[in-house]
Length: 196
Image 1: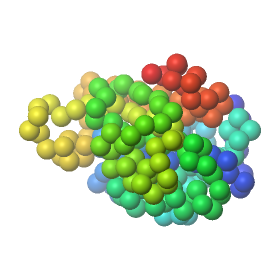
Image 2: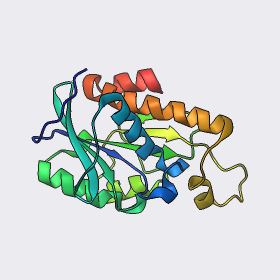
Image 3: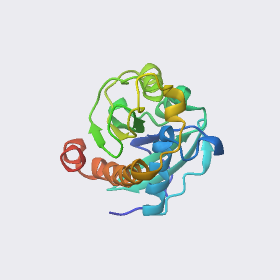
């Protein structure tokens, strides 16, 4: 595996979904941003250049030039940032990888998929709406469902996981950072076999 900073041409875009600002930093909904941090820790890539309404970086993985994005537009408007970068670099939809939280998966469960619906996730929904469809890989990090049916979902996803949930989610975040490298180097199917 070889990483280094390098400008365009970009052939892949990886978008980590989360909300900017200290208030959201360690919350369940920011599992995507935390996966970006884990990836940066592993590789030395710094996602810190403001471009396309996102913090960005470019690096080479497995011989492919990749743009990494942490949209700064808030979760439900993430698609606008991705769409701008897609158009600029002429990256096809199936070469975008989205990394997000998922409340329908148990805390710590990872799911890699080659395509699919938004599953109620507002960040994925906006990417699908603004970037032309559902045909892009994604890595979903299970953050668990609320403890009871009448628990407010917004309060749940904006809570900071602790105890066993916190440990399981932290491990899944590290695995997500590794899974995206597997997708780029060996394809979605291998990542699904290894991490699902």
